[in-house]
Length: 230
Image 1 (tube, rainbow, N blue to C red):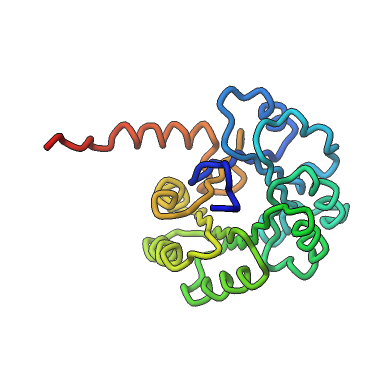
Image 2: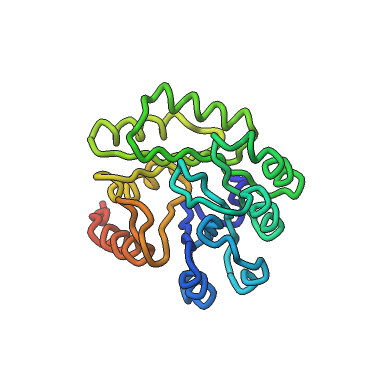
């Protein structure tokens, strides 16, 4: 896939949302495939502090309605300042008009564009998810990222159905809530191309930190039956 050229799929994304996590990220012996920089948590950060990171960078400044921190500075200015350092920029579907300048400048700089939706109240209908996906596609997104709250098996099945439907652009699908952890193991096996995990502390219920996720994935891999020789 062009948007993740040189990066294996599914790609593991380590989320940096504190100075502590930024200090940890640079010397990691086994860093994730990508880092996401949560600028809404780090508005005073200097772009020069990123020079030691050894993986491509996703930048985002999340809208407060989708789990972001309220900022005294402009999200537009913050994203534009860090855009030259990024390989990907994540802008919410709801913010495409507000952050149009960021979206267009990313295209000019050949920074890949992720269009995201985060719903921490529940999982909308399949038809509604399709509409959001089509809007992201028309906007020129390289990746559509979807995070919803899944507290029932039906929520999980709705997300799986959507993942089967969504092809171009490719999708990253995850859940929070009761089935959040399961989704982070299951969905990459079903076509979700990015898997996010904070380096130290979970930001939302149902998230796994990077160490927790790696332990579970290793356990899962070891418990899978090996094919018998015929």
